[in-house]
Image (cartoon, rainbow, N blue to C red; front, top):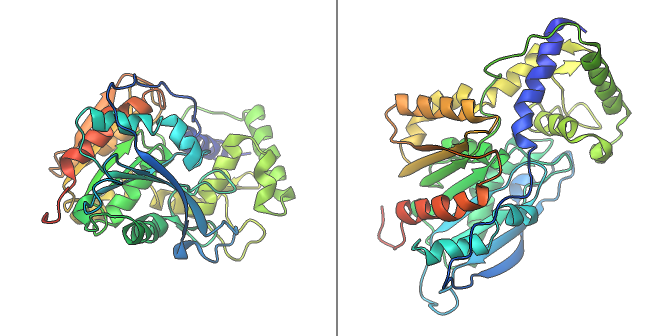
Amino acid sequence: MKPIALLALSLIATRVSPLIAQVQTETPPIVAGAKPVALEHIKVHGASLEGNLEQEPADRDVIVFLPPSYSQDTQRRYPVVYALHGYSIGAEQWTHEIHVPQTIEGAFARGAKEMIVVLPDSKTVYGGSIYSSSITTGDFENFIAHDLPAYIDAHYRTLPGRTSRGLVGHSMGGYGAVRIAMKHPEVFASVYIMSPGLLAPHPAELPRMGPDLKTQDAQKAFDAAVARMRSPQDAAGLPLPERAQLAVAAAWSPNPKKPPLYLDLPIAGGVIQPAILAKWTANAPLAFMDQYIGNLRRYRAIAMDVGDQDPGRADAKQLAMDLESYGFALRFEVYHGTHTSAVAERFQNHVLPFFSETLCHTTDCR
């Protein structure tokens, strides 16, 4: 393997590594006097997901949290916050990471205005959709931006205008929040980005790598494993980092003429594939954000946070600086913690209060 291919392998590993660290998180203290929210498990059909080549189900699990007053005040309508989970987990596991309903109840008890909170499941056979538009994986971007809000507005007492819709995501979901917010300002008015991954087209610093036999062997083993696959389901036995590579490839470099996986990888036969890497670069927010500044100016508020021990903190800081260079009053905080350690506390004490302040809670907002 040539040195440039080794660098490319390092690039891929660096890009997907922030997506993989899904772990148990700390639970914030119970807030005295918190009233219970109602929880509903529903299925939402995604027309945007129909016909995908991975045969991911178009009917998706969704968890809906209804505020304490929802069942009593039957004339009242509520803003909605859509919360996107990270890689390797689904909506159910996401509830345990952010410790809902406790943190939702705690946020309301601490003074946040009531709202509906929606957790859609976007896990795929490779562990995550990357919230992108792909014939292989399915158009999860438009499932989140259009199919899901349309269903929620039709079945719950929402305030259906964009000024009453918020979008938040963590890790892979943070990437999804960035991507979808930039492209769909007609749907959402406030966005909160938590510890985002996959922001940059390349890592800030590539390690100095020579002809490392261990790395070469790992790449050869991965190539051989992919060659043996007869369907996406065969990825179940692969290590998580390798499944993450397939997830990104399925989302960003789909190939409808290449069964059975219908994707292209950026290294093939030990050789870097510049055209495929270019497709990955084209999906990096730090590469495409300048094209969507007009869209971002339509937002009422944008917030982002990242832990000081998060491997993606440098890219998050770069995105913050880029937005601030355009004059955005971004709410950006680097807090003490890892990629996942404080996600539940942040959700209760920062995310939901942010939407309480920035979303419209009445019918007469503009």
